[in-house]
Each structure stands twice: as structure tokens, then as C-alpha cells.
Image (tube, rainbow, N blue to C red; front, top):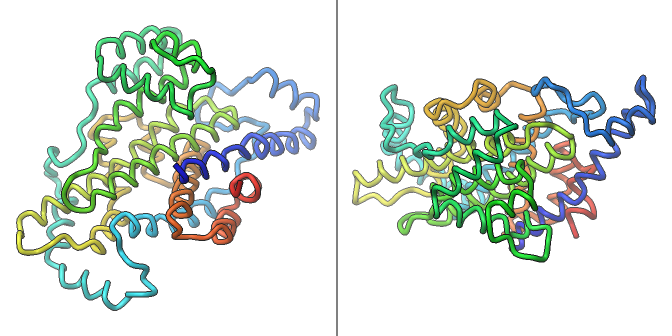
Length: 361
């Protein structure tokens, strides 16, 4: 798939960029180049999971957030087949105004204190056990293997992911969970398990706007890989948390989409408005993600990142993953040209590795 190919090409530059940042910091730091090289070789990380490595210089968050906020609405318009605002600004505004009553009803449903939990994505049954396994590294592989073995469907999904181009590193096929652990490692298997648990939630509907859940899942898959890659290259211990955050952030837009269609069903004579759906997904998606995460009893740290405002590396990984995956999809669908992509990554402050030859190849 072209979008994934663009994203993978982009990630090729992550290692070189992060390596250059570490080398620059080590050269000017108290320990010098030798100390920085020794730390990089040893792979040591701080025990405090919310503190970046001393030899990694994290880019500024604000430019990345601004750039991501600028491109994400374009993805939602693509997903709902809404024409570009420059071409139909008056028509789109009129269409949304005509559905003002539906907009109020959708907003009321999404913001109600007694929100119908049936309209929210349900927490996968195995997610609490997965989180326990992640927090107990000494028993992680054993627990994960047992969890997967008890669910044949989950086993099949995990093995499919393990044999995909994103994870597979050997020519021989991976046919067992044990082999997946050996080849991919525990950290990668955690990410595959989280993805496999949540992917059924994103199945496209046969009714209105089936492209939305499909594009949302494609962006989520790409963002998971990019966030994980950033965490890996920055030698952060938060690879699994970065993956899980991306997955949680995608649930909010999906819940808004589902709620909007349910509200429209009460007015059979009125077809769902694509411009209104795109607007509400963008406006209410993040808040719904946080609400779902709270309902699923996620950790305070993950909730803090979803609330916004934190500048820790885990939050940067989340925004970076979503930004790069969104750009890849927009370029693949010819919404933006390569030169526009280069301008956007420069504005985001990540052009040192997200732009240029690596992403354009």
C-alpha cells in the first residue's frame, strides 16, 4: 500500500536523526563523546518512565502539535468525501447550518453526564491482563503466551501481524506464538497483541461513510509504527505505552462517528451530513478518547497524556506518530503534493528526519 510505503520510507530516517541528536548532545555534554557512546552501546535507560534519556534532545512539542492540528482536519474531510473548503466554502457552511438540529442532538449525546456506554467501544476482555503483564516484565512473555493461547482468533490475528512486513525479520514464516516471541521479542509482541485486540472495533460499516473507519484504522496502524519507532530510537522504555496511546486516541473519533450515525437514524428523511460529521469528529474526538480511556480505567499517566499539556516524550511520540501517518495518507490520496509535505514537516520541526530523501523515496 502506497501510504504505508511512504510512512516506512519516512521511518528509515528516524535512526539516523535520533543518532545525530544523541551524538551532538554527547559531544557537548559533561561526559563527552566517549561517555555518550558508552551509554548508547549499553542501552541504559532511566528508571523514571516519564523522564527522557539524558543524551536525547527532544524537539519542541508546540510546532508539532500546530502542524498536526493543521493537517488532521484534511484527513477527516477525505474520509467523509467533503470537498476542499476553498472550492465549496459557501455550500459546506449552508449544509452544516441546515443540520443545526442534528448537530445539537449529537453534541448533547456526546457530552451527556449519563452517556450511553453502549455507544462507546467496549474494552477488550484481555486488556487488563495485558496491562498487568506489561507491568511485570519478569513474567510478561509467559502471561502473554497464555493469554493468546486461550483465544484461537486472537492467536491467528497475532500471527498474521507477526508475519507482516512490519514485524517479520526472517525468511521463514512464524507459525507459533513461541516463535513470534523468539523472532520479534516481547516488546513487539505486546504491540501486536494490543493491535489485534482493538482492530475488530474499527471494522467498516456497510452503510454511511465506510471509508472513514478504514482510513482511521490505516492512520492508526501507521501512527503505531511511527510512535513505536520514535520510542525505540530515543531508547525510551515506553514503546508499548506509545502504541496503546495511539490506539486509544483513535477510539474517540470512532465513537463520535458511531454516535452521529445513531442520531441520524432517528430522522430517516435526513441523510447524514458529511461536512458535519467531519467537523464533529475533529472537534469532539480527543475528548471522547479521554472519556473512553477513563471508562477503561487506564493509568493516570496515559490519561494525563490524553488530557494534553504534558511535554514528556510519550506525548511527543503520540503526536509524531499521528502527524506522520496522516501526512502519508494525504500524500497517497493526492490531497497534498510532496513539496507541501516537505513544508509541513519543516513547520513541525521534524524535517531533519521526516522530510527529504527518506520520506520521498
